[in-house]
Amino acid sequence: MSSALAFQPETPRVTKSARPVLSSSMLLAGAGTVLLSAPLALGAVEPWAILALQASATLLLLAWGFRQWANREIQILSHPLYRPMLAFAALITLQWLTGMTAYRHATYSRLLLYLSYGLLVFVVTQTLRRASQLDKFAWVLCGYTALLASFSLLQGLIPNGKLYGLWKPDYGGHAYGPYVNHNHYAGLMEMLTPFLLVLAATHFTYGARKIAVAVIAAVMAGTIFLCGSRGGMLAFAVQAVLLVVLLRPRQENWKQHLLLGAGLAAMIGCLVWIGGNELTRRLASIHSETQQELTGGVRLAMDRDCLRMWREKPLFGWGLGTFPVVYPQFRSFYTNFFVNQAHNDYLQLLTETGLAGFAVAIWFLVLTFRHAWAKLDHWTESAGGSLTVAALLGCVGILVHSFLDFNLQIPANAAMFYVLCAIAASNPLQESQRRRSRRNHRLILETQPGPTTP
Image 1 (cartoon, one colour):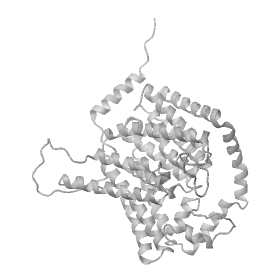
Image 2 (cartoon, rainbow, N blue to C red):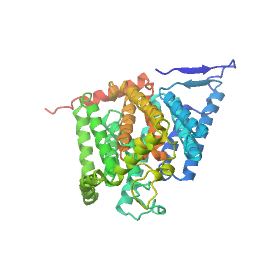
Image 3 (spheres, rainbow, N blue to C red):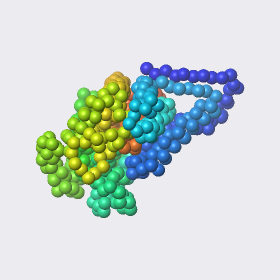
Image 4 (cartoon, rainbow, N blue to C red):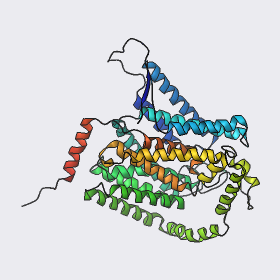
């Protein structure tokens, strides 16, 4: 249960007519703008995009501090994830200061990046308090994802190997949408699609809006398959099964099941119509490529190399961000390519931070799932519960995909993941009685049988 630390100096009271210079909704909108803009900046992997992300997070913190000062009150709401976040920051700072890292500059740079993630988490958790703040965000997210998925779909239909049709990646790769790597596009969709699915499966949309949301969700899910990311396909399948499990004991309206079925049918039809041949070829390659990896392929060899790296420094690791520097001396296969990531976020975390950092990460995830699970009773009936399920499904998707790829090394995806974890573990949102009454009235109208003809 969270609490608030408040320090109020003796100052004259502000009249009710005076309005705050910055509202919490404005700060929340700023954080949302940063999170949704980072994927458009090629996933925020370029130095200029990383600098913009860090500067934006710092400005948001300063704006939050200014708002506290203007209100003559310093109020900090506690959050269960703050403790593991501070513990991880302390561990990485220790690596950097004591020279335990193999490359101090890389660790320092990555520490600054993780601090920007922490600042975004802090601003979101300090400003997201009321269910009414979600209304505009939900429709902004619908518009954003509809445009992004449509653009990515068109780009996949007319590929020219260039991002936005203008920039050609320096090191090649399978570009999709605004990402150089199609797996990272799939990772973003894994985190955003559950919001649309939950919105379509609950009573927060109705009529034509519900149909529109379901169609957008189907297109988003379809691009996960059409981009060719097998890790994305697996992650989305796990998310879909988990959503059905969460809906089944709580959903009694047959219309919702019909809607989900229609959305799934639309997605399958989109896949067959647009990219059936490519999808079939991609799925058929799973068995052969898996067999190749199990008999000495690159991915399995990299996993074994990572374990050998970890055994050299098992407690504190080689230093955050040092994998591409240290890995060449442990690489067991020949390649002309520069291996900059482990293609397994768990093993990379283990090699870079050791058992100490891995234990903090497990602590972080346990707190996330424990606090989120406590809010799942009757989740379809409250905005906060629905938001928790959507955020939790997004986290599950990335966690599954992280066994096969390195989405959490991409700043845009990592920032989104940590914010979703914080949202899932936050306290229930405040919801007005008027809002609950209006939704209950709409639910009654939806479930009532229609008029019968004599």
